[in-house]
Image 1: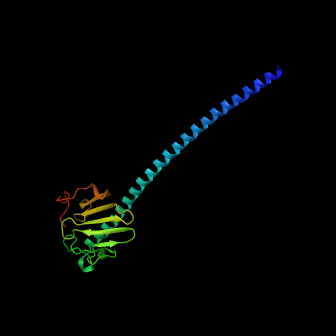
Image 2: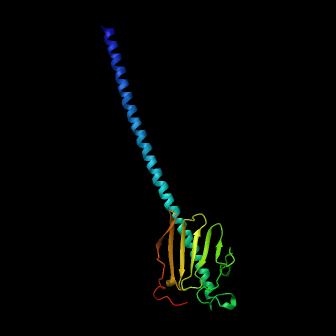
Length: 186
């Protein structure tokens, strides 16, 4: 009788161990799945934040370069013609990138490209000349800097981004618009 009791007790203990190990295995599996989902979600959010930050950094770099080109242009425009400046020139007529210290990459001097930036000067003979600047690596982002004059209120910036082969502008709408109010004529 004692042997039968010991056998039954052994079966009971081993079956409870099997039940306990099954429950523990399911808990560990659920924990593993939940932690995998959590890590995947955090990775996705991190990559999204990184790409947004990368685009913002590219816009900042282009804007800084646009301000550099602009400050050189304003200095050129205020410098007398006898000293190689454009003070007596209407608008930016005849100005080249060489005049403001960049190496021109085309015969007309209206392009100055390097590894970092692609710069183009447009509308030299009009009342609204502008610079188009693109980042060398981020060719889907560009900034147009319109100069209606050399005063700070005469400068307008337009950002654009290429989406599915089309340029989408944000900010300034340029068309037949006139210079901003209070902006003196060149």
